[in-house]
Amino acid sequence: MADEVEKPDVKRVLAAMMFGAKSPLTIGDIRRVFGKLAAEGPEETRDMARLRESEIREALGALQQDFAANRVGIHVAETSSGFRFETDSACGPWVRELLDLGKPARLSRAAIETLAIIAYRQPVTRSEIEAVRGVSVDSIMRSLVESQLVSIVGRSELPGRPLLYGTTQSFLEHFGIRSVGELPGIDQLARRDEEFTRRRQAEVEAAAAEGRQQELPLPPTPGLRPPAAEPPPDEAPGPGAERGESGAGEDDGEKDVGAGGEDVSGGG
Image (cartoon, rainbow, N blue to C red):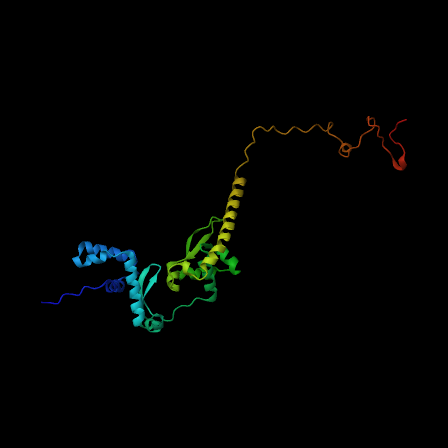
């Protein structure tokens, strides 16, 4: 009688699934496979279909510890898109030579500075990046977009609707993080950016309000009469009235006085 095939535990199944997967596996992917197999497969597959998300994640954590302890040249990594096998960085030169990849391309200091601004302030416009760096970033932005570390994520509401840039999935994988929230100092910078965002929103609203005022005529105000017509030139007050002076023949008894105090009004 042939020996019965040993039933694998969940860690072995997870390792085999990651080895055969073409892309990182999420917890949802794993549970979907477990559930589909339990519905169509043999009885022994149903136990894994009952596993909760926390239990699957616990098994993945144990698998990570096993690979790290055995130092076998690969490890289990959790990326922003799921779990997968990765080679140890210390073994990189041999793997690159095997795959004929050559030396990895390194980012220049200017590119790293620009990428940091985008990562911490995204979504951000090109002019905002240049305002922080103080120099033009046209060539650097083109290089980052071609490297798929940065992409266009929309348009700003500022006048002219400039393009907005943000980091990509490749950016997270390049730096080995699951989200931009894992960047050092992101919480402190986020609080600073709240004030920056409020100022930018105020500028947008002010620009929009100014545009509406220029495009729309002011409506007439009900209850107001049109301005009175100006009096004819012969009825208009003379310059003497503006200074509070009175002419000859007025009842206030004032007289024009010439130089030296002599009366020049023509009176008796």
